[in-house]
Image (cartoon, rainbow, N blue to C red; front, side):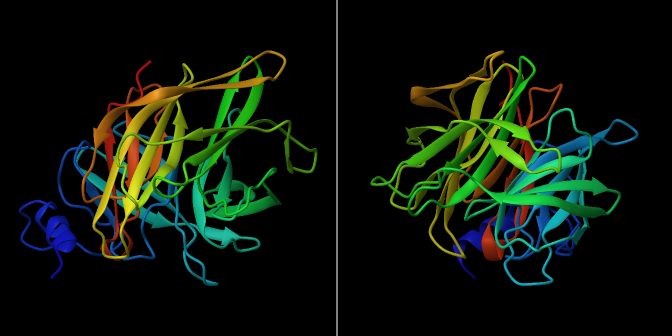
Length: 309
């Protein structure tokens, strides 16, 4: 048995039986990793806040999976509480995406989301109950040569909306490219982008040849950019990742988007042997919900206090 698998098995708790069924999770606090996927088809590639549970003891989030074949699961709902994390599959109604890597709640539009594929196709979804219906889809603007996207975030300030996304980058010779643009919607639902700006970003940690400098983005209410970075040596690992304070974003009343990246990003936490691909700051909280896509080793979620002002 390979070392990464040993780490995952050892970290689950002293339960008498390893729970490997999708949707099961070991007992543990919310700030411990909780298993939500058992294989490469059920890892967490992106998270979007949906709301609190009815009893107020947990949160519900949508999770996208980077599956590529027809009929495979694209979207699930994770309910996370202090002692558990459970998963329920959602039905995808509409054209099937290939390789979903990020998902984001649309501010001010309850039940609506944007989900992004690795090659830059953006899907607008309306979620009702256990069904996600495709409203429209469109390519991102200004896609660069070789871009591979794992992140997408929305920012609402001064009555305006902006979108952030990033080519993940690859090792020391290819930093991530962070894109930003104003965002509106056509009457029929299509996302419409304004002028695009871009910035280069290098993670402080990890910093090896397998580093993806930006594996996800979340933005706090105050405009802080909270960024995940990950290193992936293959489907069985080893993995490594971190979450960092990467800078700030502002949107003016005129809709102008300004991104100020930190010259040296502050590492908020490191997570050896996990590949973080989802970072979601939870509204009304200082916590981020983190999700991993650990390929053959499955997927995990946990919370961490990374989203204070």
